[in-house]
Image 1 (cartoon, helix red, strand yellow):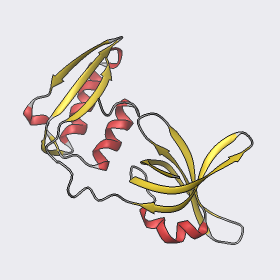
Image 2 (cartoon, rainbow, N blue to C red):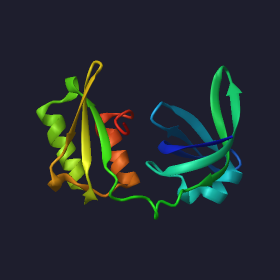
Image 3 (cartoon, one colour):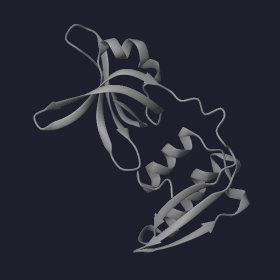
Length: 161
């Protein structure tokens, strides 16, 4: 199976034979799953296994003690060089989280990734969504680092829309 997402909670380890391996959470907008990079895969792709890395993984499903995980066979880092850098970024925020501190922290995150892409803030209150186009001074450069910072601040469901 082939899946894609953002790596999080990367944990590097060494097995009893002294061989390095890693586990991580692969997350997307709907949830996450544990991925194991055993020594063979780790030796080939270890340099690309990092928190907030956007990846595509070929893996097989493993079920153990009623837990589902993936065992990675191959990892690919997509080439975003042809991505549309000026496409607006949509950030969702429930109105109950819309505090002065949260908005200030959001401004700081956006300021750390300056660029030309507009940011649309989707304020969600029940079934009602209000979309605001943020000030041009808060335009960003889309990147895995920006997406990771936004997820860390606002939660894994904050992107898209």
